[in-house]
Structure formats: C-alpha cells, structure tokens
Length: 480
Ligand code: CTP
Image 1: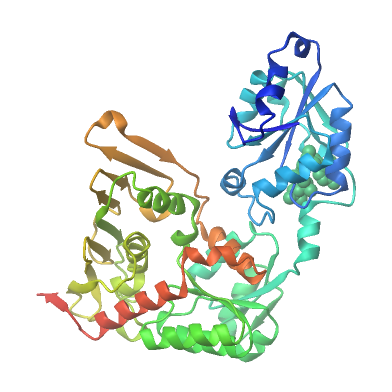
Image 2 (image 1 turned 90 degrees about the vertical axis):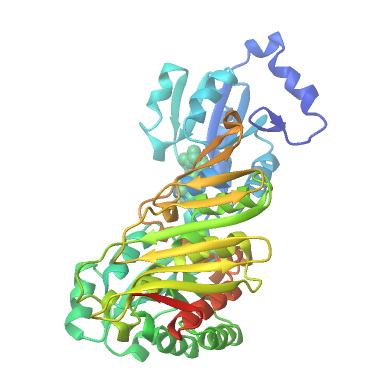
C-alpha cells in the first residue's frame, strides 16, 4: 500500500519500490478499481463499500478528499483532517493505493493516469458519475443502511439549538446559509415586536418565536445576535449571563471597554463569543493571508482596502446616528479586518478623514489611516460615496491584487515586476459565505480550538477601540 498526493510521495520509503508496480507489464493484466470518499469517522459502511469495490478486481485505489476540497464543495464540519482520514483507510488494509482528491475534475484524470478499469461508488451517487463511462466501467454499489458519517458526527456532538436575536435583513440570509451547516438547528427568533417575530418565524418556518429575550435565551444553546449595533452590548451580555454561546454581527462592540468586559465574561462563563465578520472565515481570504505572509511578495509595506455600498434611503438605520449608523460602523469592519490580519494590532497610529451627511450627522465616507513602524494602510468605507471595492497588498518583491468584491474573495493575483512570474489563484466562495463563520463557530463550541485564530478576541477588541476613537472624534478630520 502507498499514499500519493498526485504524483508526490508522502514520504514512505517504500513508495519508489511499490510505485514500480504501475510501470510493470504485470499491472496491464490487473483489473484496477478506483473509489472516492471523505471517509470521516470511518465506519462499517465504508468498510463494506471498500470490500465490495475490491472484489470487483485485483487492485483498489482509494481517493480521499483533501480538507480544502471538502471546504470548497461545501462539505463543512468534517471532523477528522485529511491525514487522519487517510489513516482510517490505510488501516482497513483494503486499499492498494491511496490518492488525495484535491479538486473538481480530478476523477477523469485519475482514471486515465492509473489505467482504471472500474470506477465504483455507493448507491447514494447513482447516475452522478455516468460521465466517467467514456473512460471506464462505472458501478454503483449498494450502500450499507443505517450508518453514515453525518449520523456519527451528530451522535458525537449534540445538535446545537440556535436562536436569532433580531428579525432584520441579515437574519434571513443567515437562516438560509445555516441549512448548509450540519449540526445546527435554528429553532427560534426573538424580536421586540410580536408581529415582526411571528411573521419572521412563519416565513422561515421556525417553530418558535419570542418577544421576551430572557425566555428566548432559555430555549436555545447559542444565539446569533443581529440587532442594531448600539444594543449589541446588552444583548451579548444577557446571553452570556444565561450561559449561551454568542455569534454577534459586526461591529461586535463600539468601545474597547465593552469588548474587554464581555470577552472576559465569555471566558468566565466558558462560552464562545465570536464576532461575525464572514470574510475572516472564508477559505480564499485565509489562503490570501497565508500567501501574503509567506514572503512571496517580500515584506508587506502597504495595504489598501475598500468597501462601499451606496444607500440612498435615508430612513434606514444606516443613516440614524442614534442607532450607531454611518459608513464606518456599517462597513468598516471588512477593510479593517484585512489590515489587521496582514499587519497586526501592535499599536499602529490611527487617524480618520471623513465626510458627513449634514442632515443626519452620520459619516457617508470615511478613510481610516493606519501607520505602522514599517507599513501604512488605508481602510475606506462608504454609504454615500462609491469607490472600487478592491484590496491591494504591496510588498517589497511584488503585490497581491483582489478585485471587487474582495470581501467575497474568489480570485486573487500575485504580480511581480517580471510579469511572467505572475500567478492567479481561484478559490470558491459559496453564495453569501455566512456558512463558513457558522461552521467555525460550531467547531469552537465542540471544542475544536484551532479555529478561532481566524478572528481572535484581541482583534475584535482592537477594532472596537477604533470605532470608539472615531465616535469620540480622536484624530478625526471632517471634510466640509
Ligand atoms: N458509503 C456506503 N454506506 C454507507 C456510507 C457510505 O456504502 N452507509 C459509501 C459512500 O456511498 C461512498 C463511500 O462510502 O461511496 C464514502 O462515503 P462518505 O461520503 O465518505 O461517507 P458517508 O457516511 O456517506 O458521509 P457523509 O454522511 O458525510 O455524507
């Protein structure tokens, strides 16, 4: 048995010997079978499938999905990582070769590359792989009834009952996205007005709705706080006091003190408190930060990020100063996220240039300037001014450019003086992308502590401090 990632050896010293098998003439007379799967929490269904597949020929190749591929096809919440899942398959002793499935379209190439005679897969996929019949025989094998990785995951981790506090626009989108994350069940909504709560519950087929926040909290394990910014503090505090996990819309808090107090309270109560800036959890953004920090473009010297969304209806919350409206509060978290993920939170000097709406007094366009020891950055946010929503990261060896809308990154390019070295990266971002933050939140609840590096409490506290500075008029230049 050997493990291959494409053509690369994973370090088994026998690889070179065993791989000779494939160039030997004997192999030509062998009947080769290939099958694919995630093989998370390896179970009897998997064993049976591999046995049935192996019985179809002489040599069985098993493709195990990479973590990135599962993410990109929306299979979130897989509990074991790729190395563990490969180990599951290896231990079964049924695979002669294990390959890693890294992207869409790979099956066609693998079938040809490994001289496959039969492609076999469970009956839950009937018809889905008929396109491979052009290259080999396709067999759908009976699936073992009554067992699946999904069921095992749910047995291991109880379903988290989640409630939505607030029945506004984002709450509806959140509900839709939550359907893509297994292990979470959105059961109720809270809204101040009964009519609104009832209507929201009916439209979204939620079993329960409440107008009493405390009662609502008694019926859930976790809360998604999607009420206006200026009441986040009260809603989050009460939820934490009830011992509930909280995912709270951005900006989570508007002052540093509030942020410090409630992140400390969350720790004390052993609850997860997470700011919901969806970009922080998106696969492409994570890769973008990894590439930028890897030294490929040298030292980062400047970051410029923009998010504008023209809003003309001045009756909306966005134009209400008493509800913490304005461009920076509304949209500034995104460009600031890019800056702090790339340049850190080690006390940059921060200043603001802003244009205000004379009637409402809210800012319609704000530029935040960050001055670090070796780099500078600008975050632009606009609700009354339109600007290209792109992100540019400039380094001493090259730069990274992400076209608008960069906060839903699906594509970015790496550019150098010698343009022959330029590279393009394409990564999926599914629909609204809220599923990534929700899936990370769920992982944290289940104790998968590796995820909160994506957006730490310290980073959220730092951003709350910037909102506070702006509101207090510290280092703010108002354009007339
Ligand atoms: N399989 C099977 N019988 C089961 C479960 C899975 O024959 N009870 C087969 C699938 O049809 C597929 C392979 O095992 O050919 C790998 O499936 P995978 O998706 O990894 O397992 P599932 O248990 O179906 O996982 P999930 O619940 O996450 O979809």
